[in-house]
Image (cartoon, rainbow, N blue to C red):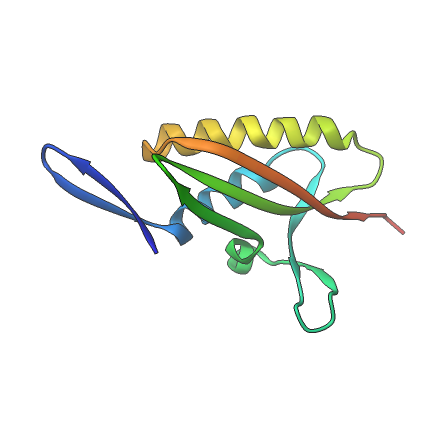
Length: 118
């Protein structure tokens, strides 16, 4: 499904995968984020997604005049999860609104796992 923007020059269609890719790139660039996560529906196991599959860990919904983004992330052990989530919400909202012109009404960050270095 695409997000439609009407202007005096015509109509612009932004695909959800584009929004998800931008949000994923911004989220993974934040300190303490290991990567995006995907939960297997078959066995419930959470796995770290590679760069090319990053949008699978992100859900984009259109609600009213804005969009709602759910980010499933994996964080590094020993970092402040609240600070990471605040940083992700701020950065994702700013970058998406600045780069696409879309209104972001809500960014939900779901921490699926914590990676511990061995």
